[in-house]
Image (cartoon, rainbow, N blue to C red; front, side, top):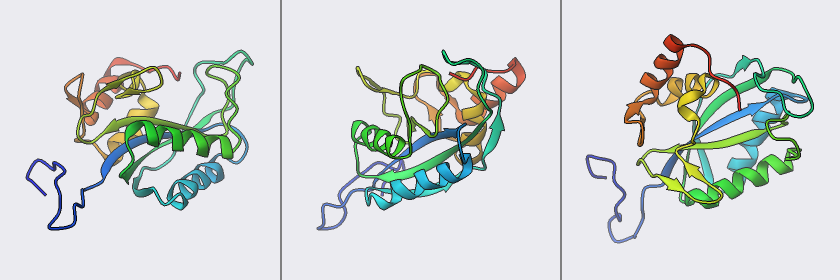
Length: 181
């Protein structure tokens, strides 16, 4: 592997280092911790993803209510995963896991059995498509995402804001709470 961590073919095999992605994970319905663990298990069982790091889970209040009114508190965390999937393929897999574990997308910012958000890729990939924005467009505003992510990837750089995850988390801590959305 080159010094910058770039992907390159391995000797005589064509092998490439997998992409490493950061994923935010959250749940505020049913057995929150059990559902989060089941989500990790399903991702790994897919055979397409290796879970390489997992933050501690933190409980946070649901700041924004969906159309259904107040919500129970969330458990939030972050994962780092390795995969050869492209960003859109990984997003599709994350949505399949959410659906398999009971996620219903009927109320914007509503309660969730499982919420898996694609946050960043370690090579700084930027995507703005109809179905995916990478980095996540509100990442820098969400303490409940940045705090767990800073635990497992503090040095990762936000490719648009040109600041590390740790610096973004510290800026929110100094500047006040960020809304859940």
